[in-house]
Image 1 (cartoon, rainbow, N blue to C red):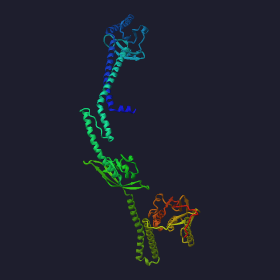
Image 2 (cartoon, rainbow, N blue to C red):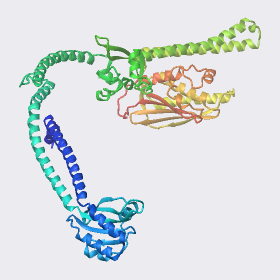
Image 3 (spheres, one colour):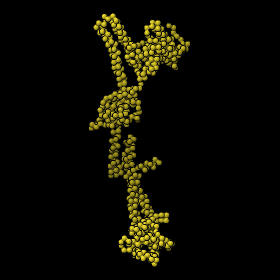
Image 4 (cartoon, rainbow, N blue to C red):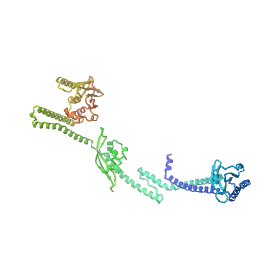
Length: 617
């Protein structure tokens, strides 16, 4: 099947088919015109042959004008005596459409009856001859109705003569002629096909050899040469092809050398490189660019560079390349794999100055941007957090300088506020120093194996004692209760007790601050596979869902006014996160507005049997 398809698609076959079709078309056009003219001429000749002579029609008209019985006999005699082998039936009617004579003796009973043929009525009323060909199951017949007139004037039509002649012989002759013509056309077609094959073969043989050589050149084989058969156009083409093959071989060697050097440079670059054509469609990407956008080369080639870079649809590739503006591109925005790329564009110009494409170089500046943003945010937050207490201190000190220190009621209040603000700044600076030491990795942890159940109970007992002391003092402090859901299993973990106590204290204090009066703080401790999970839940206002991922950022507060009012620095949860992660653990929160928050801390846990050896301290 494949071989047949190849033969049909070959130039040799196409030339032969075209040549043969041209001859067939010429023969058929001539034949169609010839048969059409022959048919028309034959029908006209047949129509003339069945035309009733004028002497007969005059005699019939004369007898019709008498309208006597003897005249009817004369009409029948004239019709019967008229001999024309082509005519099969003759009927004579008067101007009242009454049949007066018939040529067929078997139809004499119709004489005296009124004719029902529409054509007869039309002729007797209009006085014009009509002719048509009637085809039915009995064959084809020509019907000719001629008016019988005498003299001139409106009442000159005395009747009509109806003539019906069988045309089957005429059509049989035409059909035989058509068959003969078709047979001749078929024979001519076969001869033309053979001739066309020989001619097309002589033309296409050199072309076929050049095609085979072109395929070898395309496969990298430049050793062959095309044979030159003559000095005509095909011979000149073969000679030019041989010269071209030599030049292509030299050019290919140079291009391959340049390509290997370019591939080596691109593959070892730490930056991503994307090359486009002049329409902005990607043609080349190096491995680093593919890894930046996590795509395959086949999915990127021929696509607009704007689509690969993830730019808006209103930015066209031509505008992007033409402006050559540097830009920052964010990949996988909002995900843990977010990456910031610096894109720099340059045009590829030919010697003539024509722009044939562009190159986009992508440099990963994620860490740089992240550090710069964190530094800017940190400086901004520190400045803002320190400005508030310093502004407050300045206001109160100015008031004291203005004479408020002399007022025994106001002066102590002002001094108390300045002391609180000073202590708040000291706590903030201490927290900043702690975070700085953690960032620099100079904090040394004093790790020891402890039973986390006993450790957590010790911390919670301290908070229970604070609750009892507040009830005895009746100082108007917020009332709360602590509910424990701690497993009875001994959970031994290796931690720095001072730092972990700082983490739990911070979360417990936050739970107390943001819980309503009389609220219940639930502390749970469970063991899951190789992790222990500590949970601390409150019944406070909760944290909005949009803020859950930011509460561990430095200086981030959900309710800034309330946090400052209660003396928070905005660094407690950030320090807690650093400490937990230093213990190779994780900290996260779950919350629902109006229903409280739950903080979770997971720490690595290794089950120990009672037979393990312990060093006595």
